[in-house]
Image (tube, rainbow, N blue to C red; front, side, top):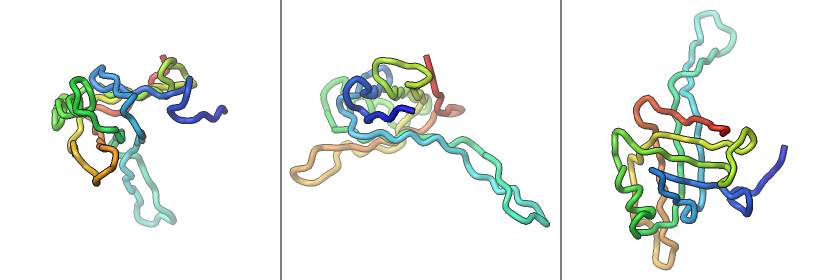
Length: 143
């Protein structure tokens, strides 16, 4: 298995939301692919038993803020609280999608957004958590 540096050189990741490329404003990305843990332990059991419940996916992205047209604020703010959401794509390699360089896609909306956050002299940052639209979850693409 190859080890690579996230977001560096020829393997730099790519982030788009509603087809707007926001890659050059991304500081960090965390993809959470989770299921609720449902305890199904019955009487007389000698240990706990568990089953996966509902999916609980999210993608958290830390952006360098930008208020220019077709940049971070205008793109994110347009879908804040939207029921239908927009497509968020995180490619592990910005140039190639394959079985060894997958892309992660989520039809999603940000449910909270802090357009301005920080202290004097700080880089203007905003962290956005993208949650799935109804009946959606993260899909992993290899082509």
